[in-house]
Image 1 (cartoon, rainbow, N blue to C red):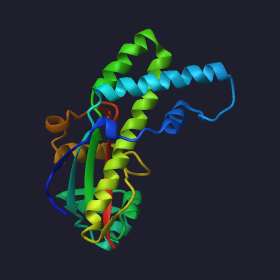
Image 2 (image 1 turned 135 degrees about the horizontal axis):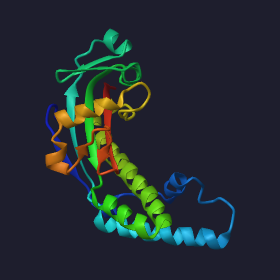
Image 3 (image 1 turned 90 degrees about the vertical axis):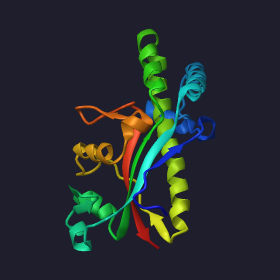
Image 4 (image 1 turned 135 degrees about the vertical axis):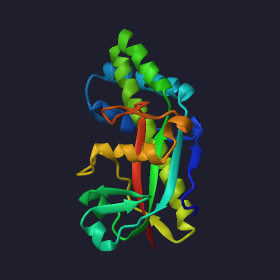
Length: 216
């Protein structure tokens, strides 16, 4: 387990697991939902097309760093999280990383090509643009899940286990804490990820998260 070293992780698009049920969930219904069979068939065809088009252009990559948590246990219990000369106030994050010694800061994206594709189809086929949105959301979640598994296996060798990912905007963790990822990681230079004034990110299909590491 390498501490205080920024790792640049890249992944092959074809290796990301495809979960069609998740695409249907993002669209607002189950793939097993009854209804107009003809319409259902058309949606399935559009989903397959969106998967194919996105796989051609997406570039899954991440930056992450393992950092020592400087907070005492009593501070974590009161929602004070200290690391890398940074302090966060969040009871929910403190609860999430209770008993953890280290924190992974993670920034992941599948690239800007999808944003451009969605923008293109928004002008000519809004239905397909919506399916591209849902498929892109599935792909970024699936990619981060794959990376999460790799991290789990890596830190397990050192006798640690991962806590669930926790992102800015969850619970009482302010969206403004997005700034931390962009201060500690070279997101723009290395993976083309930028933070907007609204604390949303570009490319849109991107995720930042804190992950606690607890000794097993």
